[in-house]
Image (cartoon, rainbow, N blue to C red; front, side, top):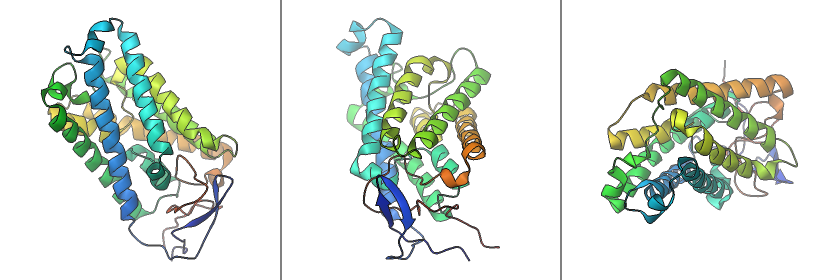
Length: 288
């Protein structure tokens, strides 16, 4: 039988330090699933809005910025700030702000996400991504479907699929290794969201011409579905999970699985935690 882990955990100095048995574990955590859907939906809306502002021909900002690197830098800054804001928001602190099936898969592999929550999170992430970009298209109309924006799809660059695959795997590896290293360090943990936002900014500025900078199967699928444009979709379903799983393997071989305290990107000082964080061994142990 799997060990009993409470829905809530005691927290100290920004870390979940021990399970609390005040409430029994429940198989499904609907509030957290809803938060994940809203979080990635918000990210998609933000991406669509800023893409219209920076790329649509009718936008005055598009005409004022002629340098493509500068344009990507502004887009990266906007999306990096969006990601950080979601991570540090009250709702992001509750769900852990994964917003990405590859992130959830990695924490599941590390034993920090229960199977029902794994399914719930991934379902919510794909649903939220689709609804988010659909809502942006409904409000902004033809601005989002214009070829200059094209539902903010992520597609392989001129260098081809192989380069896009390697680039996606590499940036995903660095992101997850950074998250694991910073979030599990007492002094660094409060800055996990800052580091994630900075990487998003850097990647969109520098790496986007290679793969479109996704790192997220749900994010890419939501845009592709609305655009009915699926080139290289397999890249975004394979490279980000592989890169993040490899990062987890490197981290645990170097520091041990017990160093992974929680599946949250930001550890609040109080509030509910569904991940049994702080356990010295992986939270989940499948029954024999």
